[in-house]
Image (cartoon, rainbow, N blue to C red):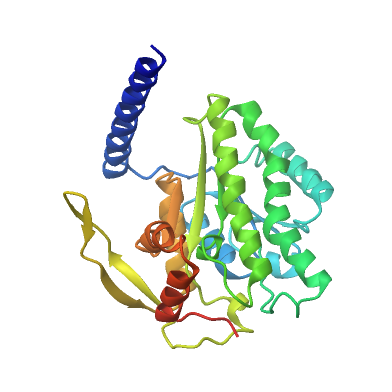
Length: 316
């Protein structure tokens, strides 16, 4: 009887998964971008880089953009129809104060979208980085996301709707030398967002509170200034992944990928947010390296080393 019950539950689970895949396919195929005109969008780390470009793009879509950055002067120079706040995202108390000011501002109110984008990168091996550098990286890149989300989350829950976006990285899937603190922080962001997704699901709010995690490849920002790479194009990406026949996966076509420009990364992020995608990989076919190639190589350190040598990306 127990075996029958197990098989019956397994059958319904498999059927549920199949239905879920079909629903997701049609949702993605038929999805239309939502409008953000007059919506309040909070973005952290907006003084420069990708976040600054996001502020411009959302402002062009008539959104009320709220910019938060530790560098208040540089943040205010971003300009446009945005509201600038100076705040260190590693300070939870100050973030709660800023969140309260934004929510209680009659021009703004509870944000419709919160985008966590503040970040730093210390390009050193573990034994070379100082305690302060490691702590600062985790404080901003990971804990800063916790504090930002927690500052606005109560208001979003009270209203029962909203959208939380976290800028992670392909480094949230692959560790690498000279990037231990950065990779650890991005792995943590991925874990935070996956866990939060389940918390929202258990509250029954998954249809009204959306989450999006962004996984961009290396982008030409100030974070890359202290780096040099071992090849001009850095990475080989899989452009087309799978063609299934019986149980075999074949047809892997590789293409060379240069470092991304800020505008193309930011535009891909905006598109993903407007379509309320759960995960956004930039470029989109990087998904196959992060998910499928990672799974194939995870069982053997020798296989991982061979693939890393082939992909040939190193921070120096």
